[in-house]
Length: 551
Ligand code: AMP
Image 1: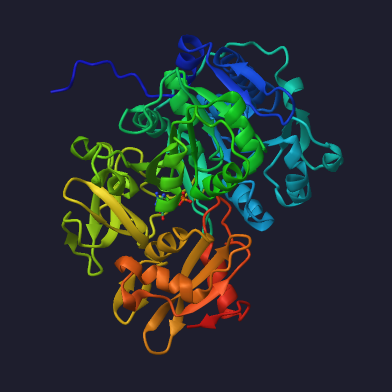
Image 2: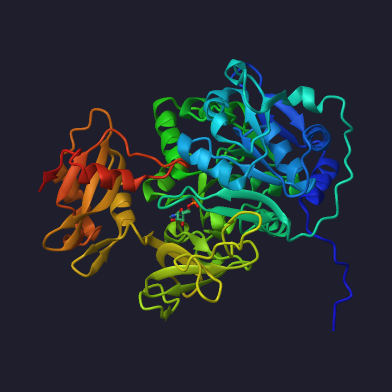
C-alpha cells in the first residue's frame, strides 16, 4: 500500500526560497579587513541568487548538469553561488584553493567545469592555469583584486556585479528530481588521484536538517555562526544550507583566516557559534593567550576534521568557548557523529571523557566495525576495527565522468554498499565512536597497534609543546616504531627526556609505546584543509631530512 502523502522533492531551491522569505532579515556578514564588514540580508542573497541564475543561463549558456565551479573564500557571493547553481539545475563544484596547481588542473578537467567564479584575490592562482583548462569557457570575477593577469585569457572574462546587474530578482526554479546532482567536492586525496563525491539535492536537504538538530549544532535565528571551515571543504560542513533553513546569521571571514583577524571578528561581531579544524583553534588560542580579547559571545565551537586534542578542549572550556567534537568526511556530507554526552553523565566527571570521543551517530547514519578478517565486531568499547557507514547522505560511489559508471573501488566500498571510512576505532555500547587512528597512520609495532593520535594528544598536553605529530617509521626489530616530531613553544627548555618522562607519568602512555625517536620541527606540515600531513613527515624522514635523536 502506498502512502497518501505528497511527494514534494527535497530541493536546494526550497531551502533558498524559505530562507530568503521566512528569514529574510537574517544576515550574511563578510569580513573585509576594513573598518566595516559587508552586510547582506538573506532576502538580498535570495534576490541576487536569482539574478546569478539568470546570468548563468541567459548570458553564459549554462544548462542542466553543467558544472559551475567556484574558487572563492567564504563570503556572501559564494553563498549566492551555493544556492543559484544547484537551484537552476546545474552542479556547483567548489574548488579547494589550497591545492597544488597540478591537482587543481586535474580536478577541473575531470569535472569538465564550464564556468569558474573566482574571487579577485585568487586570480593569480587561476590565470596561469587557463591554458590547461580547455573546458572552461567563462571566468566570472567577484571582489577586489588585480584583473590584469586575465588579459588575453582563452576564456571570456566577466565581472560578477556587471553580469547580475538588472537581471530579474525572481527565478522560476525548476521542479527537479531530488536525486539529481546538486554539488560536487573532490577529496583531498592523500593517496592516488582525488575522488569526486557528488551530493544530491535530497542528500543535502536531509543533511541540513540533521545539522540543525539540537543533538548536532542546534542553532536558531538568535545565533550567529562564524564559518571558518572553508566553503570548499565539504560544503562548509553544511552550514550555509542549514542556516538558510533556520535563519542563523552567517559571519564569513573571507580571506582573513589568521588568528589576529579571527579574534577581532569574534570580539566585534560577537558570533555565538564557530566551526573549524583544530589547527585553526590552536592558532586562535595562541593569539588569545598573547592578547586577550572579549570572546564571551562565543559559547559553542564545533571542531572536526581531525581529532580535537584534550588540551585544546580544556583550554577553550576555560575561556567559556565550549567545544563540541564532531567526525565526518567528504564522503559523509560531512556530518557523521557529534559528541553530545548522554544526559546521565552531564555534570559528572565522565562528561569530559564523553566530549572527547568523536560522538554519537545520528539516526541517519548506520555504523558497523569490521575486523581485519572482515568479521563484524561488537559495540563493546573495546573491539577496534575499521568503521563502515551507510545512510541517505553517505556516498555510495565516486564520480567517473558524465557518461561512465560511477567508481566503487573495493577498498572504499564493501560488497553490500557500505562506505569503508579508513578510520579505525571502537564504539561503546551506547553508540559513541572513539577513533584511534587512520588505518594508514596506525603504528604496527611487533604485532601490536600504537595509536599515533593518542601519543600526539598526550604530547600536546605538555605546556611546552605547541604542536606534535607522530608517524610510523621502519624498525628492524619491531617492524615499525613511533617517531615523535615536536614543535616547541618559544623559549621552551624542554628536552626529549623530559617529554618522554611526561608521557610515561601517571600511566598516560604504556611503556612499550613510548617513542625512542625524537625530532624538533618548526611546524607540522598541513594538508590543503589544514590537517597534519603525515605523509610529508614520513617522506622527510625517509629522505634523511630530519635531525633525529635516539633515546
Ligand atoms: P576529509 O574528507 O578531508 O574531510 O577527511 C576525512 C577524514 O578526516 C576522516 O576519515 C578522519 O580520518 C578525519 N577526521 C574527521 N573528523 C575527525 C575527528 N573528529 N577526529 C579524528 N579524525 C577526524
